[in-house]
Image (cartoon, rainbow, N blue to C red; front, side):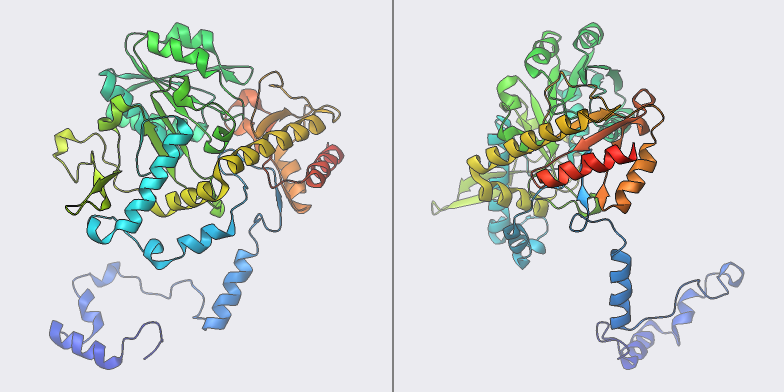
Length: 451
């Protein structure tokens, strides 16, 4: 036995070769011409023993700027929120950690119940009637929502605000191109969707209006004003939302949204170097049969005992292909469980308190940074949640500043000029409940020194 984790003995290999009718492993590759085979040694290191390999991997991992050793002010989609220790304890249990698709409900009741509770929490947060068992992430959820709008309205045009996360807009554009939908973008004014431009561009061909609130700049959109514009044109209103912000903000469903999507990463899901995360997808009752992915329903068995099953399945694997509304192949059940445990642990009051901490600390930071010489807040007149943009003095290099901040043990903000040349010199700052007053003050002091 050459390795204790690979229990393949020489006798096992000999017996397998005999059954295959060959004398060596090399004979398996006899059909590949000798001239196209690699003839040298691969440029890889020699094999390491277990102790040396673990030490080497720890050294590599130590080069990462993690949230345990660095103070993070970077958001733009992935946030440094508190993850209660109970979450990792629950999701590490083998019945959840190793669970796959619950095709057989009689042996998957725990998994199905966990998903059902996730759906229930999402409905309560968003103010919608039905939620599915989760999506891959917030961006793909938004793209699927656009596809739902086009199918429901039987139209071929979508309007998306440029205040939506740029990566989400890219995903929506890719899906729209594949499905043959026209995609129009409307600009922003004071950090939010330009309502006048939206009103001018929406028309009889528009199937859905896609809005994010709080949006990419952290600003809160006026959904009460957007809703009548969308519905007057016969379009669906699709809102992408930060679920944590709904601890304070009115639920989008109460403001007229037809579809509410988002990324559940703020709800107890670790950043994990950028993913994976979990998307949520909720609709009003009128559109539940068009919702992609899975829905877990509550029922009773023949003895009257409560049970859970997959229901209203819209996936092509389960029903006739021409009737399928989506080809999404799976969901993020384990990460949805993270969100469920988080919401049940925090409760309504805890969610409100955490959301309030995000608001208060972000506004304290904005006030501190706005007083720095040469620094302005371009969207100061617009309400924001836990992110805000600052404009640095002309000539300031955000890349150079972030490099110096990293050397000081801080992860700086996001360079908005990467996505929009008009926002060159603008930095997006995220402040969550984990940031202390001392950390915010130190960040302001170091940024002032660097400027």
